[in-house]
Image (cartoon, rainbow, N blue to C red; front, side, top):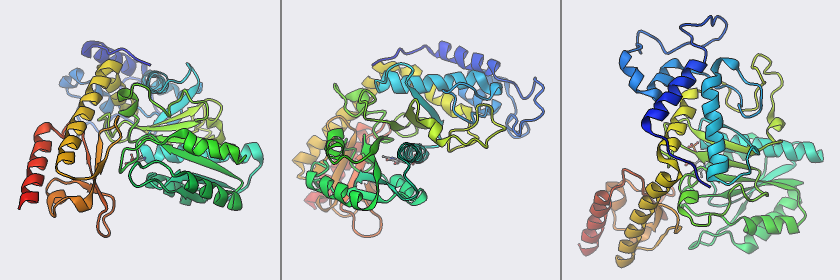
Amino acid sequence: MTWEALSEETIRQRVFAALTENLSYGEDAVLGLPGSFLDRRVFPPLPELAGFPLLSTVRANPNHIGCHTLGDSEPAFAGTQAIEREVITLCAESLLGAEPGTIDGYVASGGTESNLQALWTLRNALRESHGFGPGEVGLLASEDTHYSVHKAANLMDMPLFSVAVDPNTRRMRAPSVRDAIAQARGRVKAVVAVLNMGTTMFGSIDHADDLLVPLAEAGMPHRTHVDAAFGGFVYPLVAEHPELDLRDPRIDTLTLDAHKMLQAPYGTGIHLARKGLIHHVLTASAAYVPGLDCTLSGSRSGANAVAVWMILRSYGFAGGRAFCRELVARARRLCDALERANVRHYRHPDMNVVTMRAGDLPEGLAERHMLVPDKHDGPAEWLKIVVMDHVTDGKIDAFLADLRASQAA
Ligand SMILES: Cc1ncc(COP(=O)(O)O)c(C=O)c1O
């Protein structure tokens, strides 16, 4: 699982070549599309843009409507669609270990849309393969699962069965898994199991067997989605032997979010699905879109895919790994200091999230350093630090100095 870095010049040339392969609103006869380059009075086509492939793509404004890993697509933007296909391949095969050519996907608006798209696909797949009707496919997920899965439950009429986790290890508790499956069996005929590669509050990584083995033993029809929106661009790069990736044939769909740890612009969720699944959400009435539409989005900016591709290709696997391992080392140093200061906390060893017991932190510290609480309505139980590029050793040291001074006061 690796991919090469490219030089800045190679990246620039590739993006400009892709823009040339796209139809140009300015130079070609494009009379029927309801889109254009960005407004030329407000965003003039300055010559300096030639040095900035992403800004040039934003200005050219390609529309990546539809899914481009399937065959037919809108021909007007074939150049940048090819870059998006490369993003999907890099993520699915080079980061997450899928077999070549086995994954469909697209760059969605974010983790929420990628999760909705996945759960919609798997709900329909279960309905269509078994003849289940409305309300007969539920969701099974840990209590640490992101609220977008609760949104999906509401939106798509999928009862949600929640599994309790151990308060210290954040691992799903076996008796609670059994209870949740028993409850599900009493109310629905199948479930979509959701596993987390990096929970929002803790960065904890679920173990697939904790949920999937009891489900299989219970003989309950199910499909499996992995929400790697939070950890998908850290954990597989940092861990020596990552779990929960696309080498596991039980995993059907997976969400990544480039606008979190990959530091891409907002609007860069990544939806991945095993080939043979995405047709379950084909909207056949999207007749004016070449290749029809299998996505939740509709129109979306091709520049987002270009941004993700540029980051992945600038770092390569080795550069990405070195970057993420440095973040994790910084998080580890923070944890060592917390240990000495008697602040109880959780951190997965391959993640950059440090979640502290709120009760162990002096009053006012969280507000002064903008820690994020598990809840805003009522006293927080947990407070987290996400060690990203801007969370420097200097900022961590200032936090620790404040902690020690407040404890001593
Ligand atoms: C695990 C997880 N899934 C999904 C999401 C939703 O992502 P977005 O805010 O990009 O829609 C988040 C956001 O924090 C998340 O942490």
